[in-house]
Each structure stands twice: as structure tokens, then as C-alpha cells.
Amino acid sequence: MPDGPPQHARHDIFQANYGSEKTPMSGYELVASKLVGDLGGPPVLPIYRRFEALNHRLLLYLQADLNDLEVELRSLDRKDTTDRGCGLIPASRRHERWSNTAVSQQRTEVLGQIGYKLSQYNKLITSFRRVQELPPASRDEAQSYRSWLNRNRLIVEDETKFLDLVDDLICLIRDDQTENDFAVDDGITPMPRTADELAFPVHERKPAESDAGTLVPAKHAPGPSQEAVRTSLAQLVLAMFVALFVPIATFAVIPTFAGRIVVVALTGTSVATVLAQSGLAKLLDRGILDWVLCAGIYGGAMIIAAGILG
Image 1 (tube, rainbow, N blue to C red):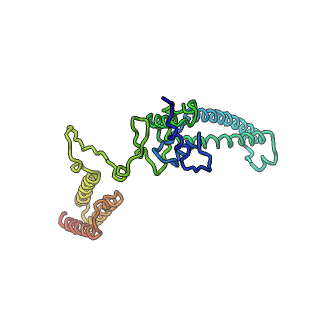
Image 2 (cartoon, one colour; image 1 turned 90 degrees about the vertical axis):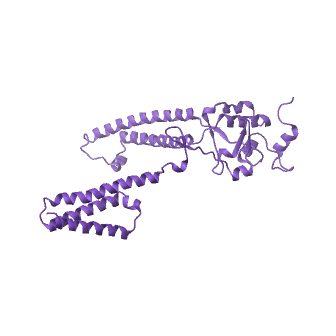
Image 3 (cartoon, rainbow, N blue to C red; image 1 turned 90 degrees about the horizontal axis):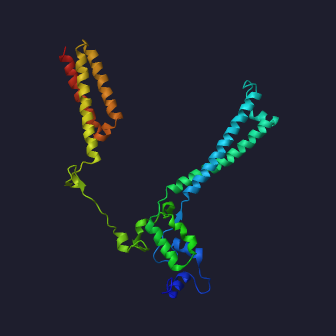
């Protein structure tokens, strides 16, 4: 049984999007066109190596070089401090350029090396961090890619061995694609989803489960808004208790009516400020007239209490 696809199939792959007057694609050019999606047919996920070990190796080397340069720079700084009378003479970058001493020349050279290597180090860390955030390729996706390459004999087998390193593979998916756009059959050939599946995706939902292990309808589970309302009510009750108890408790030690009214005003203002800053007033979603009415009732009740209690 001959290896590879039938000759007519290979002819279709190599001639896709090309007329008879153009040279057919092959090799890496055809692979790249397939990954872009220009050839049509079942899509193939673009998979590449992360080269995590090599990135760490370069970072370690650059870090070691920067450490050595940092030590050398500190040594030159100490020499410069000694030359300036142990720091009694202020440092001047302008004077350093004019004097052009051996220490200043060496320090300028070291700073230049630090700037170059530090730029490489920062760029490598930034790019490596972005690569680390890319989604990893699964074993099935790597096998699908390998099967497509082997079937079409596009590149030599030795140059497809990077797909063996599954733990170091990443999958590049465009923003307009997701892994769900590809249905994998037996981990070999990725197939696109039908139009109905893309238009009406099926979402599996699990029913809520109580602590006892019984199924509970999701609509009965308390949401975050209910918890927030409960907390707000508890805070409101506490604020009302403070607003009522503190003035009445002070009436026993404040004999004058005016002094008692001042205490009531201070307490009411403090409680209102706390309610506003904590966001409780906004969460309760009451109108301004409601709050004015509450303040009037509170003030009237406390005025009566201040006049009666003595």
C-alpha cells in the first residue's frame, strides 16, 4: 500500500489557489499558507515551540553579566568618591566629561555595556512573559498537525520532531478563532464545526448542589446582591442604634436643652457621613426626599426626647 495521499489529492493540495501559469506551492510555503487558512479544507492549528529552557538560559547569562557589571560600577564609584576627598567635593557629570580621567572613562564604558545588556534583558523578560501567557498545545492538537504533515510529505520528518516536545508547545490562535472551532476526531484530523453548531453552540450547565449533596434549583441559590442587601440592612440597624442610643445616653450628663441638640446634630451628621462614605446609602437606592424625611423624623423625635428627658 503506497505511503501518502493519492496523487490526485496531492495535486489538489499543491495546486490550491494557483493557476496553471504559476509555480505550485510546496514545502514550508505551503505549510504557512495552510496555517493562515488560504488553502481551505479542514483547518490546522498553528503550533510552535516555546523554547522555555533557551529563554531561561539567555536570561541567566544576561543576569550574570549584569551582576558583574554592577560590581565593577560600584568599584569605580568608590574610586571616584575617594578622588573627590571621600565625598567632600560634590560630583559633577559636566566636570567628569571635561576632565576625562581614567575612572570616568571606565565608568562611561561600563555604563554603556550595562545599558546595552539591560535593554536586552528587559526585552527578553517582557517577550518571554508574553509567550508564557499563550495557551499550550494539547497532545491531540500536536498529533493532528503531525498527521497532516506526514500525509502530505511537505517537510522532512526530522524537522517535525519539535511536535514531540508537547510540554514546550504553544498554540497560536487568532482573536477571531477559538479552539472550539475545531472538532478533533480521534486526535488525528481536525474538522471545522458545522454552521448550525457555530450559530447555536450547546452549553452544558450543572445544577446547583447543596451542602448535603442534594440538587437545588439554581434560582433558589442566594446571589451576591442578596448577600449585599443583608449586610447593608445589618449596617443600617447598627447605625440607627448608634444614632438613638448615643444622644439619649448623653442627655443624663448634659442639663441644657441647647447642649443636647448639639449632641443630636453631631451624632446625626456623623452617622449620615458614615452611611454615605460606606456606599450604604447608594446601595439602598432611596431618593433624596426619603432621606430628608428620615432626617426630619429623627430630628423631631430627638428634640422631643431632649425636652422630656431631664
